[in-house]
Length: 146
Image (cartoon, helix red, strand yellow):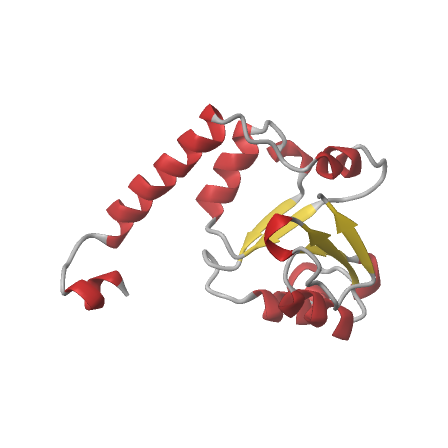
């Protein structure tokens, strides 16, 4: 979009790496941490944790490394890196990863994917935060971080 809007050219990968480097430095310098519920969940015995995100895999892994929790997750699935969308993964949890929909819980902050989860009989937990306050409607449970 920037390229066409301003009729400029640049290397997308170099631009991405510089931008992500900046963001990761902010995570470190500001000592950003996941919401406290993440650490509570990761303490559950006998539960396998996976991440499905629209972010690129190298970003997800870098942040998990900064937080020293990468080893807590069995799978880190990047829709962007795998060139698939979250809808497709949620619609095909068993075919893609061997998980029955009844064994999956979705923690999400957008109605779009919460709705997909509910339509697939996936336990859908809405994560309410500053930017989506009082807007989540398509979930089994609502977890507020406010």
